[in-house]
Length: 278
Ligand code: 8X3
Image (cartoon, rainbow, N blue to C red; front, side):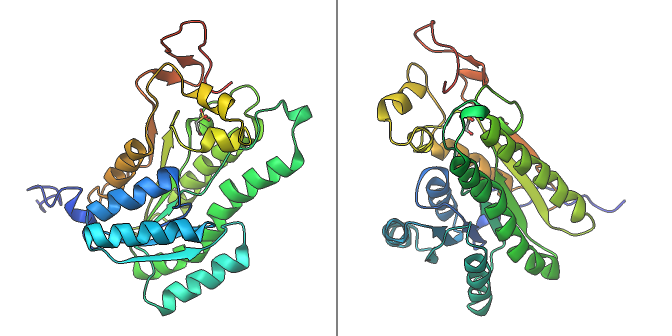
């Protein structure tokens, strides 16, 4: 019998990331920023994208100094299709195409009933969470197919599994991320390219501040009375998914804080509030 690739066990998930090149969108804050740090600790080289280039430069300097990895940063809004295509052409000419693409850029705007929703909020969410992910994947995947290797990891959400009141368009965008993860996997059968989605519940980031347009009091309330996930917790799971042996495709991972078991079941120290984020 041909020996199985995992028998005897090969390198662990950390070692497999050594010298991999990882591209992360939305890398200036939150889960994207934590991914940059976690992957750097495992010896991966980074291409970091975000709109806020000044923040990325500080992060680059810090990661290079601390971990001695190669870090390139670019200011990019993933909604800009031409900008995405130009950047990927530049990455190709500089030999910086990634082994792992982390489609992390995403946001939520508003928490309103659909009939009161703002069209510009919907466009911002769909353009970033869905179309931005598509533009990046469409630009990078052909190179992965040509090399017959690579991994696309999409940052989804539990909002892509269960619809909650007033989540409407945000939920739809994250359902789309899950559908696209599945679709890409089907289209890439027969290649060695893997596609995964990591779908967190409540994570303490700028997410709620952005959703509530800087209403800090309302945003703080979302994370009160229990321990939410940290962006590092999610980045750690993403790194585990990325570091799985090449014959293992971790298709979908749902990660909740222990105090949350669904968008509707959240254990807070004050028992009269049990709805997440509402
Ligand atoms: C973030 C989690 O529950 O606020 O996507 O939608 S939730």
